[in-house]
Length: 370
Image 1 (spheres, rainbow, N blue to C red):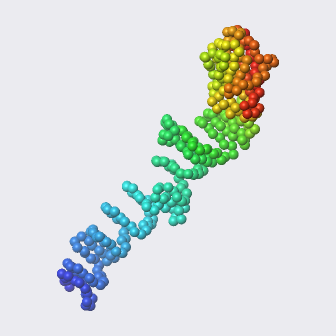
Image 2: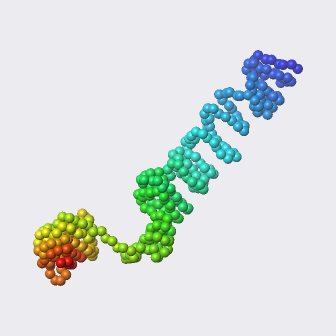
């Protein structure tokens, strides 16, 4: 049989038509079932007997039914009104940005593998990382690390530079935290191990709590080496110093004390005046910016040492005030000084015990070197 050419087929109203050769339709065709081993649509598309396009390009505004295939390339946007399901896909390769309006679920539908909300936060599940987390900031309200946390920023010059650890809340560390840069803490660092240890550098100084409510400082060797323990504060407030120098700063003043001299303890508990003591019966007023009465509680005690250059026996100290308030001294030897040294330096020591509000017991002593 030859070719059946029809300018326009609108509907089939007669018995089925069998075409054993080519069928060319140039108009609109509304038919029943068309069975063919191969159908050529237009001049560029060929559909085989299974309904699969084997060649050519299909351009259409709407598809109905399923579109099945192994590969596909879309030069424009792809909108999916239902669920996009990938089966047996190892990875998704994207060169641009992926936007998920309602979040991204990683793992099973229950969120065990981790669920990201539209803001990029993990809102459910547990994120497990076998490698490094790099790029951007890692932020959140809580975090648990069962292994070591390493932060490397050896070139950091400020606490806010890249690589610094900045914490506004609490940090719970079950194992170790290694920081090569700076740590800026707005909250607290909590160590959950039995004997927490804090090492500042490899083989250098470290802090340790070997027992409950006990704090030690080491300056070398291992944490468990008692020979390297330099300071210990016990649970009862006891203080133990182990060997080494014990150096206290001495404040040097070059303005002579005369009539009334001011001893500001903000400058230290030991003060030396390099100018010769002037006046005769001098009073030293012992003060601080916070106030001695405010800083001390009842039962507290402090020792103040005042050293002054002298060049006349008529110049001496025989009285003190505390926060500008008169205090009664008990002088070693039974009486207040009546003269000073003629050269060198004179030393005045005051042991002050607070017995009540603005009430003090003062034990005073004068030592002359000439």
